[in-house]
Image (tube, rainbow, N blue to C red; front, top):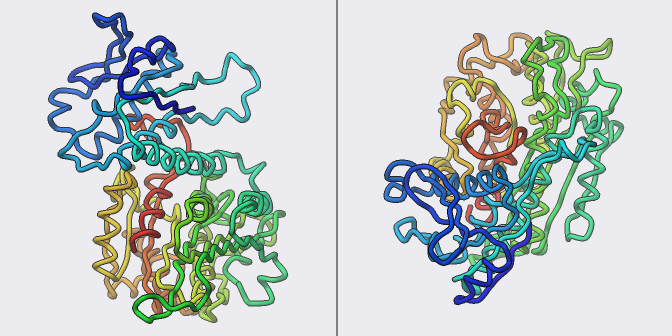
Length: 472
């Protein structure tokens, strides 16, 4: 999709180029020609939709524009920016441009990589003509285009089947993506992890013929240890992403539909990878580290077994009650490793529990933190970015649920209830020395009907991570 900028009085030029003008209206969508012979696509926003427009519905409406154009095979669209300026929503010209570009490109995405027959490929909108904008609009569209491009790259990773996305493939992709940007990418192999005592990642990966990898991304635009205006040492933000490239459940193997989409269990890792690359590409002046433990969770003679006890990187022992609760075991090592950077904030992103989906449905990710201000900021930025989140409790008494019988901690709770909270309180045991936010994106791993996104991964929560990097 390409964006073309026309002058304020060049609306007719857009029509001559074959672009269909977009108009927002109440009710349902329709195509018609107006009095000047300009072909127009009306996008219905429902009953009183224009009067009741919110940031949330605006995001969806922008995606709906592309969905309707794809459905009716319209290749070129004309957007007159003043028609989309809802003053009560508080968008700046730059922000409005960014949102329109980002949501258009996200909705235009399809995962066609494995389709070999042209007739089976999807239709794409190719050109967007912009009138009534400003230089700020152009800046916003350029930023939105950059963000959406990397969100879609993360979706490509998430949608790639496990046969082509083993831990080594993920690590190779991370190194390739970082080239050309001031991001240092390195990978710890099995031997290096064993040397430092990364028992959690190794234990999860032992059952697979594909060895686990630990991906490290470092973006340091500011000198390490440099002091800021307050005289305090500038500390990095560390992003941690779960990278289980396929999750069978291990010895506690998943059955039936529970295996659906388990090649997407590395969505957190993909989000962290592209959040770091984006921060570098946008030139954000903040030191950022990305840590991604990548492994396959497979059943074999070498697999982790129920009631095994492993020693994590922290030295704390973990009693394995269920091998399908593997993500938190890997993250325990990554969160401990994060401490080496003396971080200002650690944010982990993981498709961690079906329990989070049971609690929230599929329209928001679950967040956990002990910091009330950080929780409020995450909720605020979730609304602003479109990556909506909602808090669940992280009370100390939940720690009783994951107290080990023979080891320090158990990797699941004592009952089947509240597992999203049990997983979060487990992770908290490894992050008590620095500010921390846990985002369980299992509810948002795949798209759902009505949000005008292609089937498969959503790219959540890259937009939120960028906002946190800039404002936390």
